[in-house]
Length: 108
Image 1 (cartoon, rainbow, N blue to C red):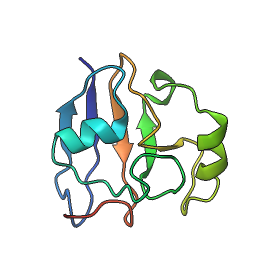
Image 2: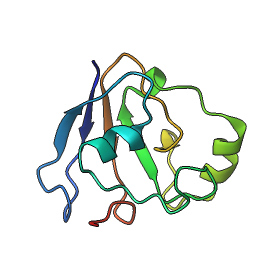
Image 3: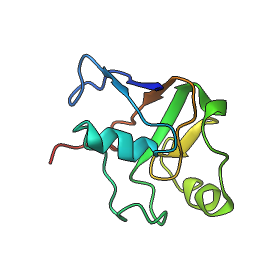
């Protein structure tokens, strides 16, 4: 099973965390199963950017970006070349490393 490393986040994950993920799950599904509360205002329907994340390693292991995600992702603050919506990016067979932008992660 692939691993997802969430890089440290100064308030929520000061030490970062590595979790085991199921191939085919989205990044968001894997995070929520492990009590990492990534914001997802639209409830995974791909109409907002609150679950925006930046893939630092393993970008090509994820599912290919679809047109609807690409359109919405263009509105994300802090957009980078390897940005994805965590509710849409399905995990492949390789380990990935993720940065959660400061305004994306919250405590519930």
